[in-house]
Length: 186
Image (tube, rainbow, N blue to C red):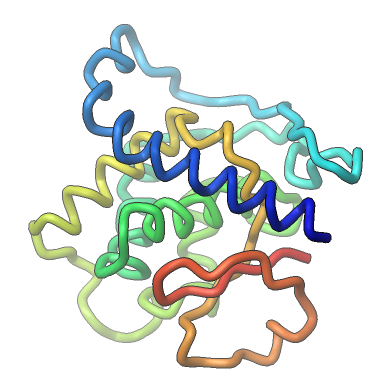
């Protein structure tokens, strides 16, 4: 248990360093050439348990401009006031759901699924304000969809704000608290 926690802390530290240095400084260099229209994920993460990554199902994910926008919207409305690490964690939750057989296999399908993300069904405008948080959300969305976060073992599919206590959280394992969100996995 302690080893898993220590590994998670180290991974988050390394990840934060990459976020700060890599996402913005090397973005143009990393995007030379054409971007693929679809991505086929069949990677596995090495973990202490020796178990196969439960989200590496090999399902084909179609990535469109609409999906980039949906992911950016979710990052913005769920974590727009959070740190880059908090925004990234929210984006990775969406991607983990896309990879899971329990959820739709497109980003927009996951984001727009009923009663999953509070901003979708709140009757407020879903048009972001063109501010720094929106710019960060757009950049992170593109980076996440281009696989820049794949090196991080963050196999969570659920989170909630730290000021609420949803019924489902007692049935899951708490993995991390980042900014104002608590993250879980089965």
